[in-house]
Image 1 (cartoon, rainbow, N blue to C red):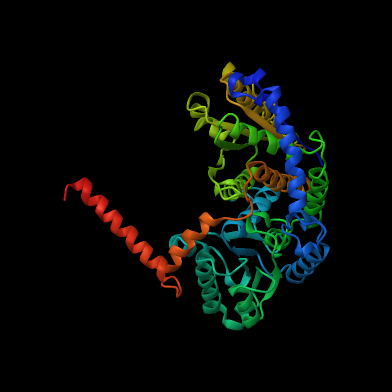
Image 2 (cartoon, rainbow, N blue to C red):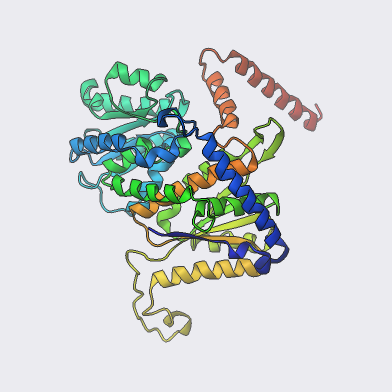
Length: 475
């Protein structure tokens, strides 16, 4: 497994005043070393794994969890041609990232069957989306996975009720129950209570693993195993990357080095937007998974000392080469407030030979006999060169290939990178208070008991809206 990080196009010698100086990099190296030490301390390594503050670094080594997943996946193999995940955010994006990377993006995967189940993810409550999804599945051949740590997220509960009702209407309550499994907290929460009441097959999210860091536990690995992916190889790649992420030498630790450079670009050059720019359609799901990881972890109002900082770097997903033709004009000539992170692949499973067709038209014929892989690589390197020429800082992550080991390692690299960046910013990368307030307003609007304060706060908000409307209307 080999993943490299190339920061050369972030330097002043390449992008002028928008790049980093040698002095700033030396300062960054000191900050990176401190971040590694402080994060290791925050883990509380002297405690048992289950009691440590943050659990994601240990997930690749959780043999018992993988054995349980493998046993269950083997017991149901051949019974279902569809795996339906009901979840949102970290409870869904990891499953999509793995499936897209290792089996290909929807809808161009191989025809689904009991040997190759398709993955359907219900991560929204748009009624047309849910209805269309239900019509596309056969209830007798569908296995439903309800994934939620607490089980109180309104979207997940509503979508699960819709799917459960659909199963029961078609098959009856007993047969429906046999087609439902859950991934949730080991001891508490509404979904755990429902599991106990209904005797659903269930798997655990460790208490010290947050949703956006959960892809390498049953949240991501159970759907992967049910769809036929090799979770042992995924975990092996992540384990190898974990070892690299604890190394103090920046030349051996790509997560720490990448975190340092992105921290410097944000704090020293004000690059408040990071464009994740994969040059592989199979990495598109990973880009969306990364958006949540980076945004929810680093976008914070206060630092650990309680000082208001309003920090964070906005992640944007762009797809090469598609978005060269929709966004690069802005990237090259618009506001210089971005840093670009290219994701490249050295070797594709198929090079994609371009037929040597002769039309007599030079703008076409020169491509004949070459490969799509060579063209994609040229497009990525050309875009990096063009942005560098325009003084737009950029860096490149390169994976040798797209297989289980590399994808497991790539995901773990980003999780460590995010944790290290949080340490350098002085914020808690593992909470999400800004998300929680919106959830409480939703509970109030949907009539959940105990949220009267938020119902009143929402009425006050509507009153302010009406006053503002009246002020501009002159009434």
